Image (tube, rainbow, N blue to C red):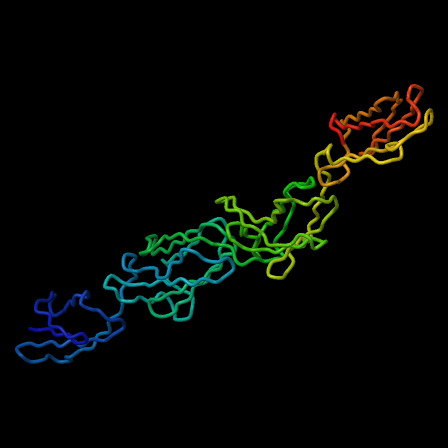
Length: 361
């Protein structure tokens, strides 16, 4: 006898038989949900009921032939990502795992996400043998996705992907100066914490913030300091601010003020500068014998700001005279009182020397 198959057409020259049963080798089938015609011929003639139509359906999904398509290496927090899983039997026929446009119903299918935080997912059958998985990750980190059939991974599973922050959300950012106060002339630094809407840190992103202080003297854009994993954004004034006061810095991102802005920056006096300190008062220009004379010495930093220096030493001398000098310091000011006693010649010019820490002012 002979056995011929159509769709696709082929002739099976040797087939197994048990009595009158014909066993057809299924690896010949390359199409899904199709019909083939079986023609049985004995003695050159077709037997009754020949040809016979047989429906060919796919086998069970096989993990070694099923595969993941479009596995992402990186996804953005808060954005829906689509992943395609293709199911095939051992002969590469597409295998349905549930009704089209519905969740999969195949009992041995498992799709799992693992990582620092929970990931919400939803699966739908897009076409026969094609399952789309959509998921939304909101927190940054490295995650794993595993797709298994009866406990065995399909091709491409498991795979790792990284969730990266979304765009800057100004209302989720913050800024703080690195110190409670800065000395006049010292560099001023304000650290900006750049975050997305889920408060994922964007410290590794080169975002640019703008800033302006309350006096409009100090304006500009932020810097990104590349320190690898410890990178950060900052407002940086390398030359500092030279006038003591409390300044308020407004910080914006693309025109929107960030949370916590404006930021207060307190400037205090710098180090004592003897050369910049000053003396004032009538007692510097002259005195009447045996009558008190006075003047004041104001301690200042190099920018002219008043400095309180409790350990500063004041020395006053009057060449050719014999003054009695008394002084006290209050809020950076020395008040000097002296009296010229007998021994000083009348109507003569003398030299008054005033020094702070032995440096003349």
